[in-house]
Length: 541
Image 1 (cartoon, rainbow, N blue to C red):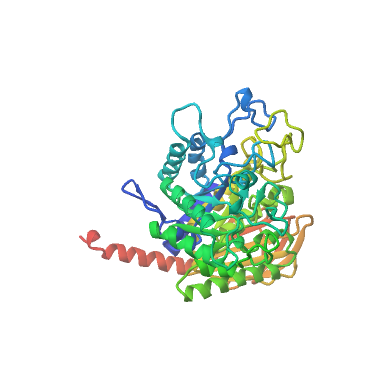
Image 2 (tube, rainbow, N blue to C red):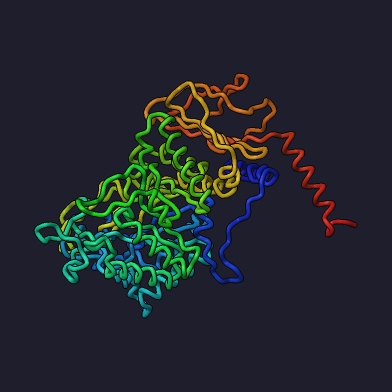
């Protein structure tokens, strides 16, 4: 049934719009198009922790025990999963930090990915020791294999340094009145960089580290970066770094972990640059506030967020500086959607990201409903590679602290919807991004509804935001005619029409998605295509 729906949808879509597919391989040579893809809201991004991405946990106790012959994720064995990601519709990988990690005052038995100890090297934990290749060459090969499959790769750019790094070079770090290095937020394994001097000028020593990092990953073939806690660096720092990176690669993406919801520095006396100023400094995108979606109980809050994003985009388009956001509904800092509202909520996030004018973002394991529950969580470890002898984890979040199992759950129905939603995003891009977007009034505040209209097609999305109770209500569908062709792309029960009102009785968390096409207009478009084909010189007799 799903294959039939996609086939029918594809046929109808060809008559309505023609969106070119992105392909960055030119005669076998990779040409970075990451910014173009992102700014057109065409990126479907998967956040990946290479250390766990294709790990082998033979005894299924969730921890990878290297001393027992089990294998952690490496750049080389990660290649085995790339064909599967391409089939799922992923066109961009976000690599969580791949630099060496600190082992002193560490969190977890392998060390936090974000406790960076060296900006000029790759994490030796990610090296495949069964061959003579260096971890650098393995990473380069991994990126080449991604590019062969038309998958772009963006690297994470950590915001702080590990305690090990502080011990090796204390002058790189901010200190409090007592001369102690500053611990940002509650991240006890890292210390805050001193990015500015007392006179407000940039600290060249820290800035040079970041330049060296950019040099390293660009030589590897990276297509961009996601800047961790980008707000913790001043405007000038980012303006200079972005300009530096773009001299080598104008399509090099800069995505800021920043939001209009975040208004405070990560530590006292730390710099704080609001998201809008980061965009002015040259960042291509930001997070928005979609991580708050789970708490929005009315469509009004949802609408305000989308309106704000639209206004920001228009402002920067006038400056000829296009910007875009990611669907930050469930990043690696958020609890798994399965824990929030089961499969219905996870499904909801798939279809929202497929039909909203934004870039999709998921975390490895989302596709099959990983709840990120680990059997060893917060227990005393039998083996550690740091000075922490506990298997520390964030409950319900992907583990970034230990040698963990490969992410993934048992939910194949969710995977099927994940693939279908990503196909819809790819095929319907022109409708979603160039169409007229509008929220629809409903008689039940728990029911959210919106539509995107472009040419002769409408994508209609309806969700029951109530994850506990069934919701009944009516929606007046704009521009609806009795002879419209309605193709259900995602629904449990088919709603009924009373004149122009759609009558609904929705299950908890249910999502309904329709493609609506005007048959007379579509037929006219088809006839025009036939005439054009007949008149083409190659087709004349």
